[in-house]
Length: 374
Ligand code: SF4
Image (cartoon, rainbow, N blue to C red; front, side, top):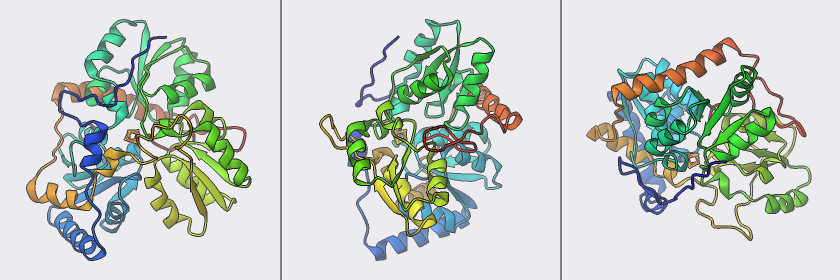
């Protein structure tokens, strides 16, 4: 299998930041009076500019609250893109990481897409540079190219299909049934999980999410022994040793749904801890326990929180609307090419709503419908 090693300090042509740079740019916490003032200012600006705030589950809780209080959304990446595309607002403020802003622009080319900090990127995106990926594709012309949502527009432009964690199993199963061999990028854990579930012939790019890659199987096993009645929720970007212990494997939306609907009192959550804000709001009274990132092999690059997601703050919404900063542009040729793989996925999901339905019960781990990436 081809190995493409991931460099945590890689910088791309647009000057995307490395992990240390990202942590250095995380805004300092504000006191309660400052938080109230800046949130009020952001709400005023969103109204003045007729803009809508589209936020990811992993960003700061105040940003999530601001989005919901001003008619925006807190969601996974696929729903963020759909919401932005379908909303009447001509200015979208996307609080998340850059591929999310790019997806919004690809789907809504005539809208202005702003982000609080354009340096907010993703290790999966950084670890899959377009030129190296193109060479990888060129070396395997007999394979159908399937990429995860967490990639740049330029990488998507080279792909036949984009998938999210909701529809990856169904689409790969379909491709397998057609006799197609797959080139998968960039997440090795999600790709390995799909490969194991479908038996498809998949060649995997070796990227990883620095947050989910940190979860530790041995330490999770010990934690489960301390909480034998807890339900274990795992995002499939996590290592196989962690996924194997899951009661539910799914995207952020599915993990949220599992906590809301679940009969258990305790939940061990293996994804970015930014999602706990929304889980606490929607499932008050339930006990949420972060899955362990510490252990013998710990490097603790993330400690269950994405530094690039953490760069997003309410002040960034104020700044991008006041200054017009942080605008996303996508080259029109690349946009049109990237639109093809996204549209193919959206059409497939629309035509096969039942195909993406997967059970997510103890012992029968599976991805679940209507759930997006990350
Ligand atoms: S949590 Fe992981 S997959 Fe999500 S943006 Fe951060 S690095 Fe990327």
